[in-house]
Length: 110
Image 1 (spheres, rainbow, N blue to C red):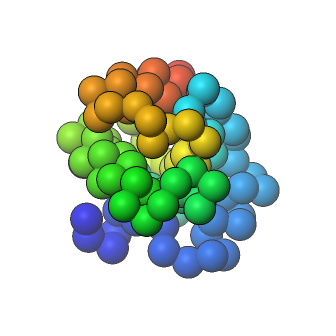
Image 2: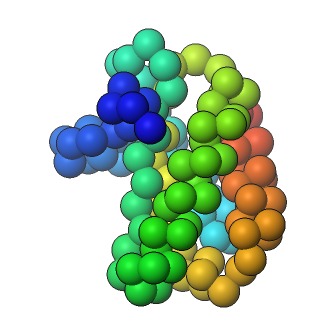
């Protein structure tokens, strides 16, 4: 993913967490705020509590790929920070994608 569609700096994540709206699902927490760029940007956080490095990277790959295919469905330039919760690594890819569908429909409603 190019740099223009990613949140890169810690300061961007901190301002988003202070000013953004939180959207909860069973497996994800998303923080959505008004973006300063011309397009939607995403930041992904998967902590060590979720699993080992292989499992964390798998989840990040799935989230990035899902966002790449569905970023046009979210209106307006938004900054989105997605935080994965525990228990996500035990799910197969198909179920993670279904959970992301629920999350992004909630984000589109915000």
